[in-house]
Structure formats: C-alpha cells, structure tokens
Length: 106
Image 1 (cartoon, rainbow, N blue to C red):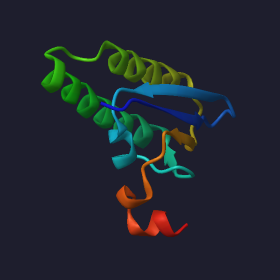
Image 2 (tube, rainbow, N blue to C red):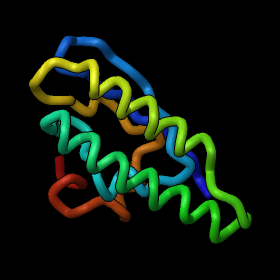
Image 3 (cartoon, one colour):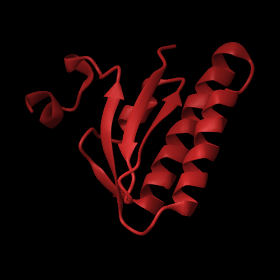
Image 4 (cartoon, one colour):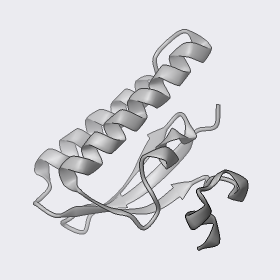
C-alpha cells in the first residue's frame, strides 16, 4: 500500500505536511486547489478515514498515523483564521495514466 505526504498552506501562511497511508488523498484534493478551511477538514477527514479502512482491510488494524494526521488537521483548523487552505504538494503524485484527463494535460 503506497503511502504519501501532502503539504498545505493555511490562511495565516503557515505550511504543514501531513501523512496518509494511501494515495486516496488524490481522490479528495488537487495540487494547487484551494478549499475553505471547513471543506478542507471534511475532505481530508473523509480521505484519511478511507485510507485507514484500507489499512484495516489489508492488515487487520486501523492506521493510527492516519488518525493522528486527522487530529492534527482538526487542531490546526480550529486555530486557523477564516480563509482557504491551498494544497502545495502531494507526493508521490499519481502516475499520468491514473490522473483525471484535465489534470494529466496540465
């Protein structure tokens, strides 16, 4: 199961990096995308929940690192001013064949 990290810039300009045990984050966020703080939290929570469920299905236990990422994002969001979160990087990126057509052309 490929793991990944994603880096974001919060409304106050702070940059943080977060872990996901699965590439599923690519289904919920886009590099260069901006999301209101509440929407970012909802999207990352859904993605990290899916990622943890994939770990559970494969290994028989939930991913505590995904849960820790979700908790950290929620904590940062609670302290963030109103505004948007920008996705700076997602590593590793999806292979070109797996990207949506619009993203692959960019």
